[in-house]
Image (cartoon, rainbow, N blue to C red; front, side):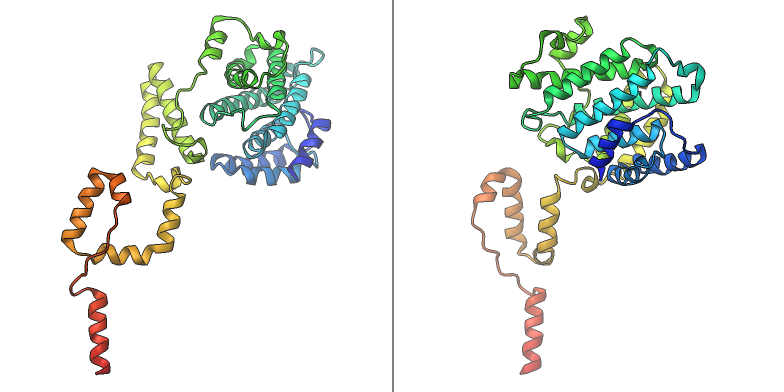
Amino acid sequence: MSNQTLEYLKDNIQLETCASKIILDEYFQSISSSWVNGNFLDIISHCDEILLNDTYDVRIVFYYLYSLWVESDSETHVDILSVIQKLLEEFTNEETDYLESDPVLAKYTCESISVFFKKLAKRLERFTPSVENFPLHAASIYEQLINLQELIGEDDRFSSAIQALESIVSIYFPLLDNKNEDISSEKNDIKNDSESEENLANPVIDYAAPTGFANSECSYYLSELIDKIDVLKDLTKKGEDYKAAIVVEDIRITLANFDPLIYLPNLFKSYTAIIAEKAAVFSQYISEHDDNQWQALQQCYMVDRNGFRDMMVTPAAVKNSTMDSYSSEMREVFQ
């Protein structure tokens, strides 16, 4: 199970294993396809089998940890950050210079850490945690995040991870204030530079869920679309219009095939359930109705939806309907 795997990683995680590079690359490619499609449960299931056998590299570990974060609760989030801290402690150990001894491993580690925290920052901006969701573990998560900030410091190799961490800290900080948790002033004093103060006062959220939508109503596919728009925005700001055109073409294809049932499944869940239950009834009324009454009801619905909801309506009799014709035919048969 995933918790058993996480407990194992907390005690035994390492940057390198003895597994074959060929095998690791095969595992990583398989997991990557699930990652692209947002199949995080598949990643967890796959990794539960291989991590306990020490058949992994740092890329696989971080794909697993992010997937587990998405699919788990706040108590598990604390353990996830503990595993990352242990990895970072090994990587930043002054006795080992991985850039010289194993540049590939160093590259994988830096990239994986950056991807993890950038993805996590974007996710938390869209699915912002609340006091109700994180009543017990917000302080522990916050402390772990501060520890990670201290570990990587101002290391240029982690520049994008550092920026993402600051954004994540600014999201969790208000939870502590709301719960009146006893966090030391030293921990609360998050890098008193102007950029951090601005983040604390106004957490950076470029693309929140649309107004009126619950965060849970945004599917993986909508999250990916928002991320593409975010990339387009960054590219145009930097004047990289040639690359931006690639993104524009991709977004156009997505919008041309946009299916709200896929992008906003929770929003349409009750709608599809009602249609599934009463499809035959609705189909009959839509195809067979008194035109005058139907038009009057349509106008009322468009002008005063609440009034339409409350009014009592009896369907007017429809001449020569399918059911009437069927009844007439049956009467003729038995006469």
